[in-house]
Image (cartoon, rainbow, N blue to C red; front, side):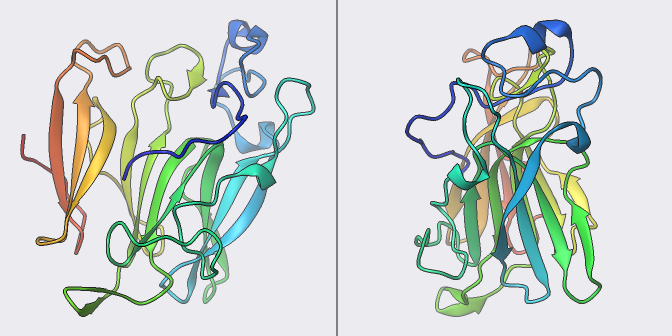
Length: 247
């Protein structure tokens, strides 16, 4: 599902300040304001864990914001939620929502790095800090669909990656994007049109398809308003390179 889990005593806002002095003066700002495009060099980040995927040579690294030493904004990379995915251990394991796919729900998760054990190369999925809400990746344990083994060789991510409403923050008020990455993280495809904000998803086991519900930003204000239309797209999980609109 394209949802995030609730967490006790979490900071009021999950956001990245990207520009303007107004953003830096906001008491609710998670990060200090940075003039222009925010970069990883300008934010304190730490790798938190190595995700074991079903692709033996491919590992993913989660990158979170480190603790901000202020009274009202204390958390660190060790306080992330680990429910909703399978990392090869009993901790955090749940039944697969979609066969062959494990899920990580992010909170203040700023990026995912891909590491190839054969080539010994590290590649960041995004070139600037984003808010990763949901990561879908090939399941570590062998899975099956209709009693037949099934293996995935790609990653899907729902993220807030742009200050679409121009309020100087990247947060949940912006449009939520949905991306496909190939196994080596070399191919990146935005599956849902940029004038939509992704809301949720549904799995169709009979067709091994994923339905993605998204609200269209008709008035072009960069956010999802409740009175704007909801459309449905679907992707074939055997090869999710294209999202087709069905409603």
